[in-house]
Image 1 (cartoon, rainbow, N blue to C red):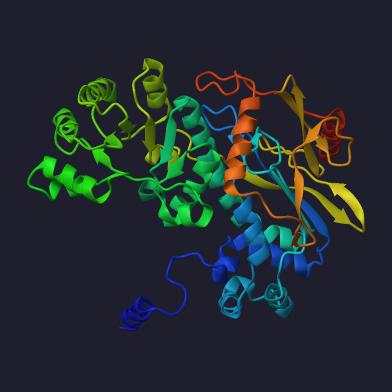
Image 2: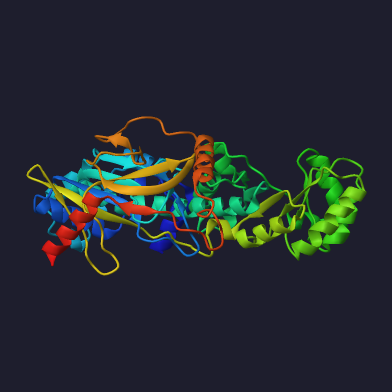
Length: 464
């Protein structure tokens, strides 16, 4: 009975809805071991600054680059994350913290991020071993950030990178995000809409994303609309009466060719039609011919239905008259590479005011020491190579990591989403053509500076 009463109370409102993320519960959106590590650091007086870096060890399958995304949400998190009193009470009740002491809970109760953040701008292409975000903060503070930062950057980077591949495949044709209903939860669908726009999509079906970030919102009709009418012709005419300037007729509820013929009989302007199933290579030319012969030469064709970059590239290669591609599942879950596997690793710590480099040497998971910077070289308006250097080394070319937070304060306003999309487009245009090839792409050259390689070797030898 108690459980039933609690459920009823939750449904009536009041408090945070179950399973939803709000500013009030950000503190506990964390893996337990981040909290136990922070408690242990405090207990042993390990409170001087540490530098952690986020990077990927290797690219996912079939990838030659990734697109950095998610920084805006990372910065918002760092400005907002707190631990409320009810959260502290919950933690006090966990047996694992029985020996943590009051000082740990006092620390959490007063917690707010006061460290420094450097990051690549959203929309920047990056490659293995290159840090895309760097945290410098007291060791307990920096440790607490790991879970959220990895989650928010990994997912949006995955989707933005997938969207970039889809837009490369589409060429001059448009790609639209139709994926919210296929995402791993509503929050993921919202962030996917944002990330897909960064990667080059024209717009999204997600209305909240349109309100929050100004992304163009686009949609068509449902099969259920057609099925509500006794005839498909009545469904089409009725829909157009309501949305004369924005009608996209869905043709595949019953028979795609017959539906196209019915649409062609409508004398008024038809902005577009959509094909969501069947053999597009066979159906699209037939639909185009039916529309053109009836005078609907300006009616656009939208293709959807389990599309990916290979299918889109084939349609483009054949020159089929598709104007837009709506992509759902394959965009928001990146079916062929559903994880970018970013990691958060300690690169340097301060002890008695001195910089102490740190690194892992475990098999296949070795890291490089020191706080690092990424330098990108350009020739003839094309990027040609990157170099990872220690942040105190002279930079011989453009540096990619920019400071966005100092002493817990955001230094400047981050760019609007449309600016990020335009920046991404310019960045992609500067990559070597072989690197942006979808099949059998070339590897982009990335090297460590001689000094960093020497430090790595010396450190490894000392540990051995």
